[in-house]
Image (cartoon, rainbow, N blue to C red; front, side, top):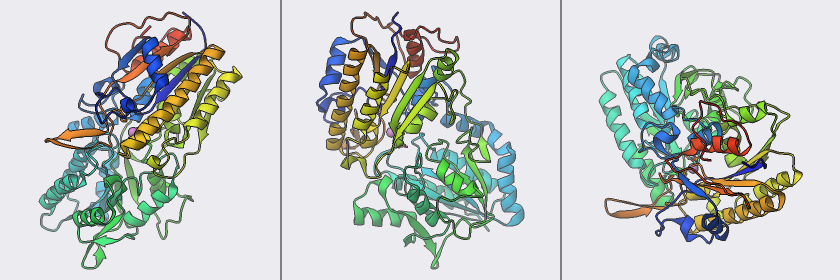
Length: 522
Ligand code: 3PG
Ligand code: CO
């Protein structure tokens, strides 16, 4: 086995498509990747469903669970599964946090607000979790409950919002029994309000605050009318629809008032942290919260276990132990990671088993390149050149034993649904891969190329005979390529997934993978 330093390139959202008109990976001109596939040992890895700790194999993969599995070599039950189980066993409703939220409503006459992504994408949230919370609140005597809904169209079909709104309105009608008021109060597209991540765009969160808390957005008689009107006026897909407030008798149905109970029912952390801080933090300074003095706030999950965000939550997240970083640090090996803002936390925080600090300040070096705040189909190169520059420089420094980077293009441009731009995005990724391979050859590195889940590989979907643009991730396998010129590697035959990558990296570095890990592919 060689003991060269190892580079891992994660092409975010690049899987194996069907080669058809929606497969932007195939449509793109990618001479470097083509050469690697033709000349290097490679496998296709399962990156969705049970292979990454999701409830079923109908669940597509995502960057959180993908980077968790890549970075820890193990398969942990993830938020989607843990919340489902906690609801099923009733543990969630037995928790002190839930009981406190309900008691606040019942004893102090406060309203209960449910804020979150309204879909069954199972990436950030699941509408069925919301339904269970609403039913329980009602059964436990809560009189006033309001939903603040973020429209998806990014983890589910691009224009499916009305289906979820209709399902929710059906349930709310059922719960509107004598003396009760259960209603949708506000909402908007998830890429317009509330769900920013990694502090890329705080004004987005502020716009959410104005909408949900202050009732300051354009008013409509219903969520359905808001969506239909905005669609007609703007041509936007769901994730980009502007904010709205639902009104009744000339007033917002409800705003989140001081002292109310609030649950953020998203389970995934990256896009839940900023709005949690806005509700939770005493000395919050990212924007002016007006006359806000505080609410009883809980997240569905703890979104950051190190920074303790939020203070209260309903379900314990997976506690991920024995990561690759821990193994490398224990052996005094140095590592380097780089990406741009949109995926920086993925390749550090998620990679390290949801750890926000470092295991060793001395051994780990992380670099973040600020992302632009623009629709990424307008700039499909994103920061791929800068990421490559940093990576090549780090390789040239000779300081590191293990280096990784994430190219966000396939995924972030993939989510826009603009196929032409996704093809370009893939060509930029290929250029980056080519330069890293060249540096690897020149400097004596093993270069591994993989991805966290599919997206760019499936930009079209056909449902009930109708073909439309797909903005969500795919369920396709992802590549795992070993580039190590002059060395014969034989990858084992078998069914492998993302959790088999860390042990393979460890083997290449001459380390013995911990017994609790999945097996090495070498
Ligand atoms: C997002 O948050 O942008 C999507 O819901 C999931 O994308 P990611 O898992 O690739 O970050
Ligand atoms: Co994505």
